[in-house]
Image (cartoon, rainbow, N blue to C red):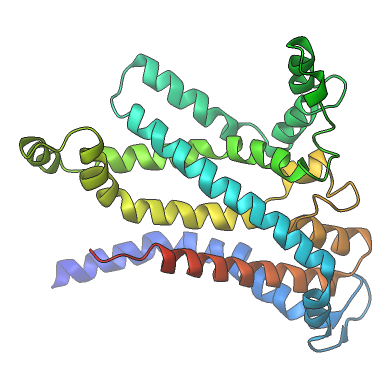
Amino acid sequence: MQSRLKLRGLLVMTLLPALLLYSFFVIIPIFRSSYYGFFEWSGMGDATFIGFQNYIEVVQSPIFWRAFKNNLIIVGASVLGQVPIALGLALLLRKSNMFQRFVRSAVFLPMVISTVVVGLIWGYIFDLELGVINTVLRNIGLESWTRAWLADPDVNMYAVSIPIIWNYIGPYLIIFIATIQNIPGEIEEAALLDGAIGWKKLIYIILPNMWGTIKVVIILCISGSLKAFDQVFVMTGGGPAQSTEILATYMYNNTFLVYRYGFGSAISTMIIILSLILIAISQILMKRKD
């Protein structure tokens, strides 16, 4: 009994500094932002209490819902792009050798690079005149396929989704590899004796043992996609004509360009609410009996 109490006390003392820092830099700012959403405030001078007016304006804004639609495109691209690619690479790179360690490092490398730099790199790749994509298309005789990838409203949201997918495959790959390596060897040996090999092993052994991790990764994908900002802001700034506006750039533009801090706080609060709703829906859809 005393050893358990000592262990709990040790865990509390270990986690307390991190919890205090997280509360100070994340939890408290979230509540303060929600609080300022009830005020009309330019960032200077006195704030005027206006009740739910900012939140009502956010909900009634067509630009907000256009930005949310664009965020949903990024969410879909991330979930359908990052998760399958990371899972597929994790299955291919289960064993540890020199080549596989090199591939892991190469996939994880984008996480080391600044997201701003990633946005700049892909901005040059998508450039109309000097971009790699259009240059390759011209050289192989497909000049009719070239286009202003970041200016064409028909494709620009899909274009800005590509660097976001590429940027965040690495951490999910590491998570999946760690999960696969922690599957008990006895289970795999028993499955092998029962004839579960190839796709059967994947469907009946590996994926069920990874299901909890996959759900966590999808939560991270959704929350990360709704907070996407850097790459889109660097590549397009939300333009042209707000065709690539997302929730974070809409919040930034209203807060720091027109100095509507109360309205921007209301937008940030709505981002959190929408994130929780989408995460809840995803968990309901992925719920299964053990």
